[in-house]
Image (cartoon, rainbow, N blue to C red):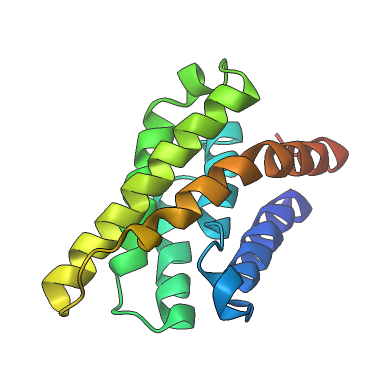
Length: 158
């Protein structure tokens, strides 16, 4: 039982590391939302284990790692995971490509929520470059879905 939960937490830890790994400035603009995509998979696959609480804790960890105001990423991740968990039965029946579109929309929601909160707290302004990760997260979804599903089946996580 604990080994199964450990796999979920390790995958979330890897996504946090991928979210902060240094990249060249030209590529960093396109960095996918690793944490959101991994949370989306686990919350659709196991909504009774990975829910809004896990998203909140992961968001706090991301706030600490990225250095933003505490609660910005946790708010965005919590709302996105809430939408997924509330509709997981419907979303699981969609094809992977349809799910990728949903993930792209959730990624856009996540970026707009974090921008909105940061705009209220600081003096930043919206740029279209801020939404490039939406596209890369959408493209990433089918491969990450396949990888995490294979991992879930290999470790018999249910």
